[in-house]
Length: 388
Ligand code: MG
Image 1 (cartoon, rainbow, N blue to C red):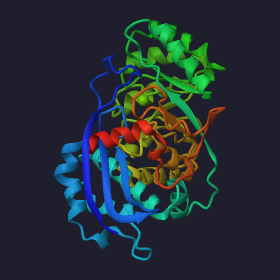
Image 2: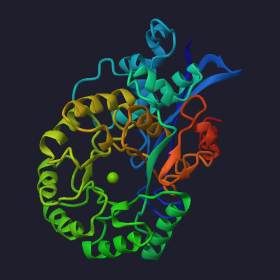
Image 3: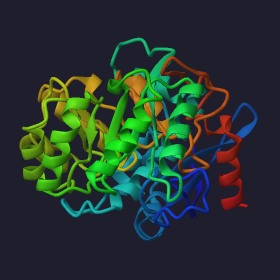
């Protein structure tokens, strides 16, 4: 088996179902990796993208990571015994010569390519990715047929915010979600409390709603927000302050007895270690939201999981960010707490697939080979348009 071509394109993604609403001109990188292998009469092609919420990383891919993969001896990317593509060996090829530190956003470039390589590995095995991962990682546990999920969204609307926020939460519940997350921090806490009240009314209980401050607060604002949020009994309080301000994070967490969540904007094992050592997080209640794609792909994410579980973190604390099918497979195969889905944000990556049933806060896992992007016509149309 040989990789014959790797292509990438940037594409805009909006936080709103209506892309006309401005949301920071976010983009992501689409990746398509073609091979000379054939399975079930079709050329094996891997698809990936750079998750959502940040920006495309095409320059780094074109200049460093794609040329390294294409220049590698084909055998150097394969498992020595099975002859199958081994994304972990491909990861070593991509990272050859990269210096420690300077994680920046190269981890996102590597992660997008890594996703497409795992799609190929699972398609070559003619199995869903979660099956390949559960076996390959030697976890020795049954992959469940369904996985816990929650609906992420609740961005502030420029007009009719309270009404539209409540409507969005109601539609989450109608779709089968039991838990949801909304954004706060863009307006004074008094206004956010009104928004939280409007969202909470649509959910079974306050403990079903998480709030995400999107790293907007300084220490004082974080302390004020924590004091006002504490009596509500929310599910979790996420991304309180600058992701690298571990002192502020620890200070606020020390005053907030309910769970906090962090890690979404940290992209490497060294950063995860710093968060664990200095961020004041509590293993008995808090949540870790690292996005496998943003953390150098599965190989980087596994290093974080391995380290933090050795430090005493339960696997149930990990709820990967991003709302993508890749996280779904990983969370199921590794026995993590669950995963985020973004039902109305980040089209065409909003819905997982209308062929995967959502009910009682769980989703059916994809059962066809690969990651399963082929189950979602909107996503496949985006890939087809990008690489026509
Ligand atoms: Mg967040």
